[in-house]
Length: 204
Image (cartoon, rainbow, N blue to C red; front, side):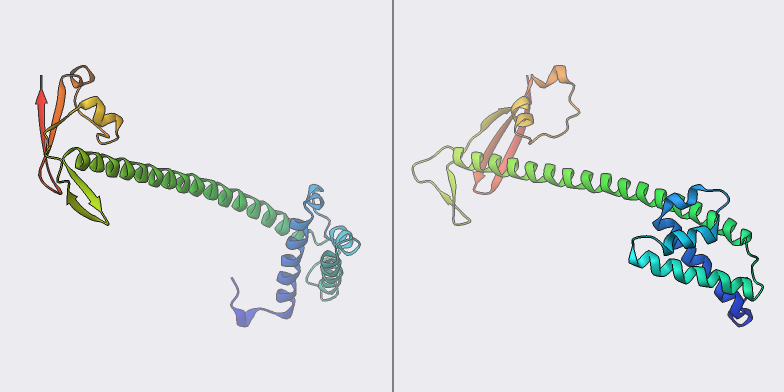
């Protein structure tokens, strides 16, 4: 690759012309169907289109092509540049497909994270409801964020829960106990003091 100091005015004009031609073809992809690309015809199509921006680009690139011919950088057919423009269009197309696939993959990951977050929130709410239920049954209530013992209640447990009940409430999320043995398992939960719980497992 030539260093910047070695680039001639013709080289710069060539690269600018090619870049502008790529922009036009990407904006009007139907122009790329003709093989090999006819750059003069593409420039004329842009210059006579109904889009003001394309018209300006078309007129500009048409003049640039003529300048390249006049200084001898390119011939009247501009075949070499046409091949480079075609290759650039193919490369940018595959790059776009790759980016779109990555975007879709990230969208799937984002949805999975959101679903998991919603699941955790649901589990948290279930756990809060479960604790509130235990406090209520053990004679403890929450008043303005503080636990207060119910004077009329004297039941501190133990409260019996089956394996199936805790699964239904979402307290047990995963279990290594075989399904045929789960019906024989139960838990006794007691609260000797507010905020402290004793969980005992029994097997019939």
